[in-house]
Length: 301
Image (cartoon, rainbow, N blue to C red; front, top):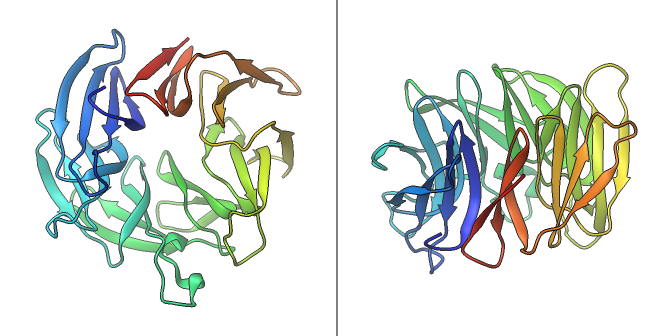
């Protein structure tokens, strides 16, 4: 890679890799990789240092940081063929966390900013719905149970969210369809039929979000039938989780673990790798992984 890889995005046969800038407010890039051969096809320079990305409605959707006022606090809609910025979208508050696409919208979480002494009004307690036809925010939804957003996942027209204090499913209209409270933080979210998988790296008590009580757990949350939360204890604090083809993948402090969901009870299997795995994007039979300490991405099968 031409720089340190961050978040990954797999869209059909294309792997998109966000590349961080050398300076915090510098200009980063997106790399387009042929997911079948691993060959780099294009490198698009961006006007921001990219953070999150999503694909949908024929476009890439990117957030990032910059000191250029034109692009500050904006969601960028980018042409995946040319890398050209098509639209700049601004919400009623600052965008900042995860982006996800559903079948009819783009959703994005708010930024972790709030008036002094009022963390209950933090932007991460809201998600915003964007109409891709109008390129505008059409709905703001406050998450229930004081939950915040760290990760988002589209599910048809519905949206899943996880963060501090809970897992939430919202309808296209913003109606709450499912809530599971968490005493602490959920760091990421993967879905298999009837189950939400949530790595929990921190314990905590509402409303203070302090990272001072480490947790080493993977939560298996039943989302249909009898409500149940099963806890899988890990050796280290977990990070990212993903799933595809009946396999759940988890990274935790330099290691990679897989779970075959057909096994009952599900068991953790360590995957030996000679690099430090970070973010990953799964496919049936394996996953793409970014290296935390080198300018590389790997395909693990």
